[in-house]
Image (cartoon, rainbow, N blue to C red; front, side, top):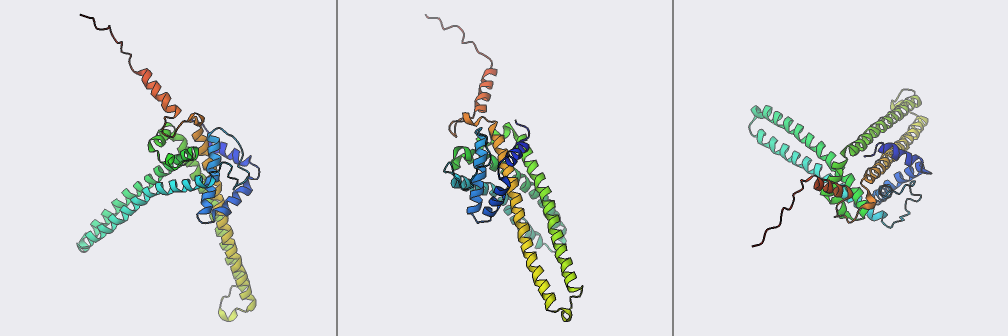
Length: 309
């Protein structure tokens, strides 16, 4: 287990020439439907694959470089893996909605006397299914991360759905994944607070300038052409400001994803990726564990050969 996945990932990012410009470029590309997320995922997981192999280098110079010829297939496979694993919490939410709807119909036929029972029934189910949804979303994310890394290494979609292999890796160092997850949540919360503060400051500024421009009197008979001009001007500025804040939010998400994916590459490197063989073959640590179990088994002496007659 390696300590400091995020710290090491951040050092790799900040030591890459022009990393901030790449984040801004990736944020622009991510706004393109379907194609954009494919490129972003292929680029980032290609960089993570390199460090998993032990190849230490900065961010690839060209986003569309496609040096290994698998930028687009890798990115598409990452999206497929993410979609499939997102189905688990979605199915649980669907079952929840169905049961809640069925329960309301069942208790509703009993008249007003059953509203208390329906309330208790709904509250209990809400707690149960909320816990199940959160737990399933967390587990799905862990499998999605590990599956995406295995797929990036082998270049095959099937490698991202080898649950026994993925679970063996997770069980080996689940604490490392928890640390990566925890740091991603912490960074997301910090950036969310900053962006929300900027958003509310922007709203306050627009409202204050609007009040100042109209002299605090918004009655129609007091609004002349100049005031309408101010309102239109600052209305346009507010739209531009909202778009800018949205773009900054996307760039912040890309930055966090860059750190997370690079950290996943470091996490995967501990499994001695250069020694991996086929995707169905045991990984090195599995071979070592099997050898250790074999060594711990008691030795049985074969005994004397049977005597002849």
